[in-house]
Length: 347
Ligand code: CP3
Image 1 (cartoon, rainbow, N blue to C red):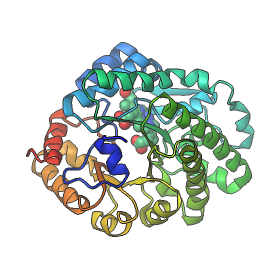
Image 2: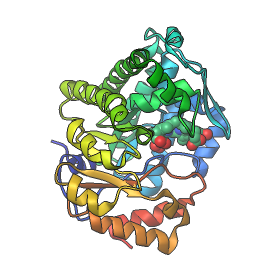
Image 3: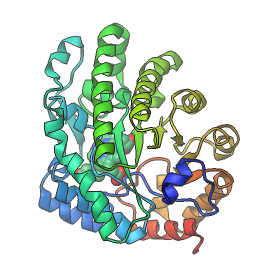
């Protein structure tokens, strides 16, 4: 039986002072990250170097003592491992060789997935022993993947998008072909998550960053169906490993996602009203979230006020404190320190 606070919260234990971690807690807002990143060369060089990836995962824990570490990797390693060209251009984000229709699927193959991702599995394994070595035996390790819909948006758009025209057009024009793409990503993701758990991941988060751009039928087809498959497969193999779903932007569809995907806990984006979440979602399952990353960027009274409001609204039930999206890279590290104190009741 685990004594880790983060895992127990995901299993339904309520804490006066909830456990916490932050999405993108390892990253460019930390000078020690920027230093290592400069040494590694590119972002992907860092992800595929287990020593570097282990080190940057540890960095925020040493400073702030989060209750959970999140594996340092990226959701786009799946398309990369399936053979799609991927580059991270400094200041521009990811660039992929876009797959705009079913013909493009020939570029993908499962043959090399484990070969490409072996360093990521090694990072997970290293992290478990590194955390114990550094006296963090109570800290849990989160593995993760992108949800197929969100990963597919990058694969089809060839990078980030504001309109999602290409990926939506593919899905409207050729739902059968698009379903093939979603299936390929779903199967690879199931495999990838199981390998992370085998290597030592103690909980899983599924990031569906673009769940909010679909209408209700598309949401059912491209968000719900693949998520149900993934949760089912992971829970069948590893029933005790909690799965957190994060359907960012899902709005009113949060409720059906929480009820029907089989996730153990649900990540709230900043727009989800906390009182509504406490009333509607939290009686069914633990929730995680949802401080505005901009309040963390600003710090001071604004941060304190927002953090206390959220703690008050969500600490009556099983809850993990987090942001509603990732740490912004201009965030002063001291603000994360201030937040940690508020959550622990030290400020
Ligand atoms: O600390 C952590 O949260 C763990 C590591 C992690 C990263 N990316 C590292 C990263 C995680 C969990 C992710 C998830 C991820 N990646 C998502 C889902 C969550 C979200 O943000 O909505 C998405 C959509 C991606 C794709 C991605 N990766 C983009 C769009 C970018 C560029 C934008 C940016 O912030 O520069 C990345 C790069 C990336 N992934 C960085 C980090 C630390 C910055 C890379 C750098 O060092 O230059």
